[in-house]
Length: 221
Length: 232
Image 1 (cartoon, rainbow over the protein chains, first blue to last red):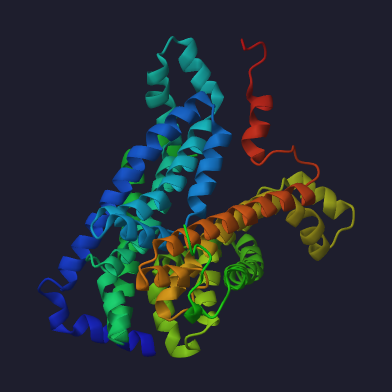
Image 2: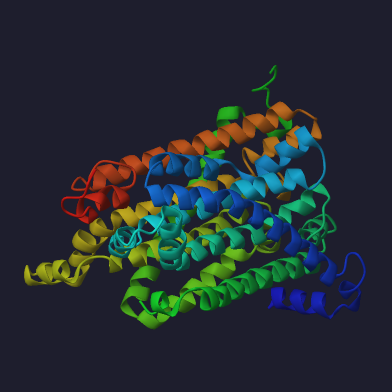
């Protein structure tokens, strides 16, 4: 297999493992960009999704905003942001956050909406405050779905954060972009493999988070 | 905004030509993905153990960045439209397969039993009972796949003018004309919204028994969940 030979050659080359263009450094940069973008997207999407899901208002407006944001091309936004703002971290974060907010927002809303109304009414009948109903009844039950929204956002961010290299930042996209212009397919395939590995690690991380955070009673269903 | 529609001649297309090219490069893969996903989902529904590995493989495929996918494919298919369309078709599977499997699984057992009792064979039952009932879920998947496909075609610009409207982004940088980038982003966004609207229309047409509204599930919920005598 052609591609497997490339992968093997890339990872067995000692020069790829050290320095500013080494795998550990690029991997760490990629993790940083992805984590920052996911944090910003979650900071926007989670509160809005929880609030609209709890009150049940604004669902249609939310769907409209999410669809509109999905329609914006990430690569186009990146080029536009660079042309308007200049090089830096901000023009990379804009497309990544726009990419990640819709899945977080819509899934959180749907998750809170689809919580069984009986326990919610019971909690209300017991005199629980609305904020306690949200955080102690609805969120624990909705957590698996909320996490799945965050997970699909994270996977998309990890895969798309490669575009940071197109505007001269680091990350694993460096190998893909540099390899493209140097006609060095070994580098491209190696970079793509690393991104896929990081995506799998993200999946594993969310699986572990789900095991830890989701209450056993909810998981069993 | 002078020169908003003045497309540099090296793109070899007019604005409307680029739109046609973009739609072809974006929609053919989604159609191919649907054709691939239907039998795949049927297999996953028949053999349950197949579903988790299929989901795993599609997720890994989805995690490969589009640009890397394009570059690797150049070796096999050259700098052509096909190189852009193959990855897009594979990406669409990650949305379409779960959408179809969940949609087909959501068909109630009584409905299937009724169809069998009426003498429907497996093929006819699939085409006339399961698929129509699963249609809203499938179309919801198609909406997500179409939007992401329209957005991803533009990355093809990086492998040598295969990005249709994305080529405008490259031109915007090359000639320092931001208005071309604005044009590209806005055109792609409008195309995505139009396709989305068409798919919603399609759902309304193929499922005349559903309540009108873009979001079937939440709209149906309050009626069955509102407790009797609840204070409004």
